[in-house]
Image (cartoon, rainbow, N blue to C red; front, top):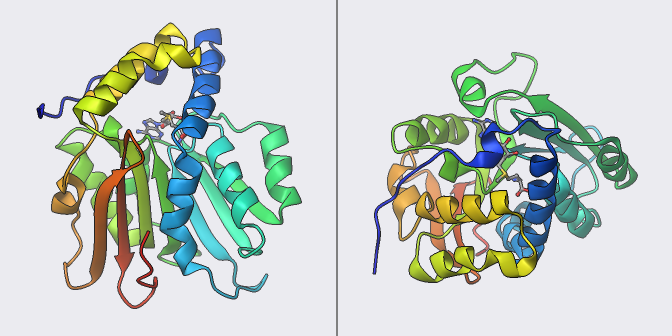
Length: 248
Ligand SMILES: C[S@@+](CC[C@H](N)C(=O)[O-])C[C@H]1O[C@@H](n2cnc3c(N)ncnc32)[C@H](O)[C@@H]1O
């Protein structure tokens, strides 16, 4: 059984950052990410570019739709042994990263800054001239599915122009994931999370849907796209010649 992709506004996207329902739903998200093994899925996609880095030339990593930064902190905790010098930017349209999380990144030796901007404005704006034109890695989780089929190519074009490696983990638009989203209350998820989970599966991806929209020259990019875990959909685009071809 397949069903068409439909993008609807999720409740968490319209709640103020400090709204108790949003705070609760973000706590739920942390639990959902743990249960779905998201940290491991993303690490398998990005760890292949590990290489010797110096403090003078840190690895530049950007997360789009970073939320409270807790997922990236999990990644940092696992990778800090091999990724010792990282310049991390956590982009979100809301300011959600708290002081404890920033301190935790610093404790791992990662230099983390937040960027509060809408991703579509980021995509449309020229890059600041003082920065290198490409991030080493751009990561997203539960983010691309917010963009409909008109906006998604715009966002992916900016991403392709601005990184050497892009890794995304999104809801899988498939019957099993839909059943899972209806059962998410079993994890103690709130009403907002329960409703958003179902909407996010309807807005999710399957098969080669992201590869088809990926704008880069096919000879220049190595693409991987497949189911990950029970409910997730994984996409990886590596610019040939820069990121290694190690499989996710
Ligand atoms: C479902 S949450 C996922 C957060 C985080 N990636 C995680 O896994 O915990 C989606 C995040 O994307 C952010 N977001 C949604 N649309 C955005 C946009 N157009 N620009 C920037 N951030 C956006 C929301 O504020 C939210 O923090």
